Length: 232
Image (cartoon, rainbow, N blue to C red; front, top):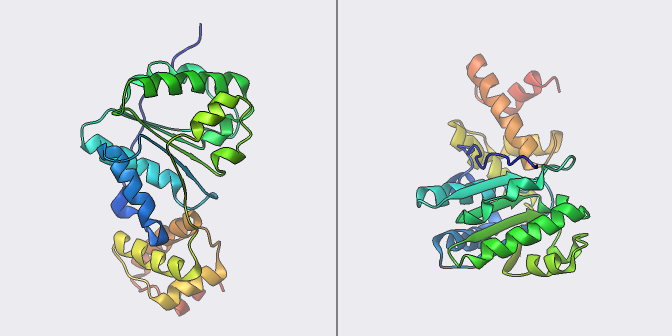
């Protein structure tokens, strides 16, 4: 007999809508919030390349839904070793279900069928049962083998998250630093973009480290200090 996994997850405290730098993706936030409030689409499929904040937005959806008293579930599909499909047992009762990286089930016949059955049960309970999915490709581009599942993934609203241009990333670094309680100048932000990994997840990790280093040294984050700190 398949073992059912516990339907609980841990909220990431700093991944709310207020913590997300939207840039050109404000319309996506509006659609997600409308979905949660019950005034928008019942189903949203959010896609785009890795590192753009799709997981952050799903967590933000869960935060808002939880605050509104909705029953909430979030799960990120791993790239390797998918969990037992028994994970889906009873999940149809949740008012908001969010699956991150749903493209990782593509090609797995057992999971595709299990998710198809969950989808029908969840949607069959009415408009107050909402589903939000993310992937790196649009539903049409997914290597889903079950035709009926592929059709259902195209239901609702499909949204593509836009990547940030360099000017957006500079503003994002300033935004994130302000959240952490310190300041970086546009010049420092551009320096970081020039010398380090440019995806936001890596830049956020770097900012956390630089914040601690500046506090320990009791110095502001200037370019000369960064060069000395990072041996450049």
